[in-house]
Image 1 (cartoon, helix red, strand yellow):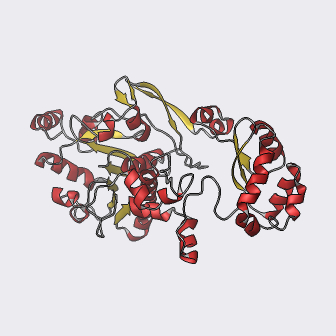
Image 2 (tube, helix red, strand yellow):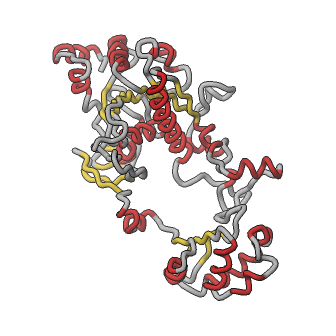
Length: 395
């Protein structure tokens, strides 16, 4: 069965991570992604390691299922080709610095004039409006400015970034979310629209309870390690041979948990009887539980808790993820074969559809691999015309 976005054509002008992650999601859902890259060098991330037979595994991990076409958008002939593609497209996605698309003459106003059904999505660091709009942005900068680092890490004097490039990835996800919703709106109105997604906005949007905690207490949240600020016990503990996570989300679970660890008396202790008391007296509770958890191995605790429906889990490294039976059962690690680089394993798609399944159509493209196919197939150009375009430096 084709994916839910089968028949949707996307012109992808993005590079590096946020934008390519967005269009990778759309590709998995069945959209045709035409990735426009600079001749000779292509997407900047083609130069990012690690490498397999000279090809970037970084690039391959977020550009699967796309077609690559080279276009020099500063060349008038190339711009004409781009405009012709836009006429036949549903979506344009770009993550240039604000103002670049207008300078090139291919901003939303210009493109919607030739295709009023076009969905035009911009993914940038700070968005198209506001005092920071022209600033450069990278994931580390946005994690810091967006508050994520201020609530991540072991303590207030050691703020940390999240291990993955979460600001890039979440803004890519919000951009894909916006595109799909704009396509749905187009079914009702017949018209496309512009979408403006900022990394900073996206980071703020996922601060979860940190925003309401400050707005209700006027105290800025700080890093508190692996424990939860509003639920206890909801944290990591050392066992006799490693670490374990537990999440006791209500008082019924707390009572059962106390019985299982041989500390039934804790559930009646006035310091710990309710969640509010456990949060208030966390450090006293932590010292008691710390002494309990080191009496057994991680697997022993997990077996006990899982038999009794106590939310718990190990802290897996990536190697263990590769061996995890649940990860395998959900097809969350996919093996792709690149024509030159060879075998590479990438994350699967987490959205499972019953009727229109998401799937990875192909590995990442070679630079310009589909240029001739797109020009001849979509724009009906002859081989002589394509040769002339190459000679002029347009492609």
